[in-house]
Length: 212
Image (cartoon, rainbow, N blue to C red):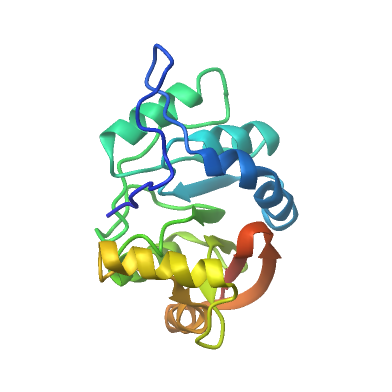
């Protein structure tokens, strides 16, 4: 099950399949700075819930020679990913990946990246994401998460509290997740919390590392 892209212009003005999420332009550079530091220099990175594909195209271009494997369960979004990736040799064709369905259509990855998914999907997707990542990653490899989180049961900003209320009003199974619950979920599946990085707009980068 993939995310609902609430901040996305779903009517592309261009004569192709590309879709656009305005938040991507604001957050791609801060996210890239973290990814450039934590990802391996080579290998394959699986991006879960790639959405419009803007991040996938930007990161693949910026982090060469890494092979970037995007994915999304939504066929319209997969078309958008493909369109954004035109001409980027190290960007793979997107996979149809529902994180709650195992096994995933991929045998291994050197890192997994998931941006803005677990708060706009049911908790079962976080469980599926962590379990699936554990099956793919070698020891020491990262699972990178980005988005808003509560810390010690509290929102980190009034805007996040308001966002959480709007999410839960739209779907009671959605909502800003507790960082401690996500870390505990990771621990239960052999992924330990390695680093938390404060990001712009009251978001966090959360890096979980697969234990041997």
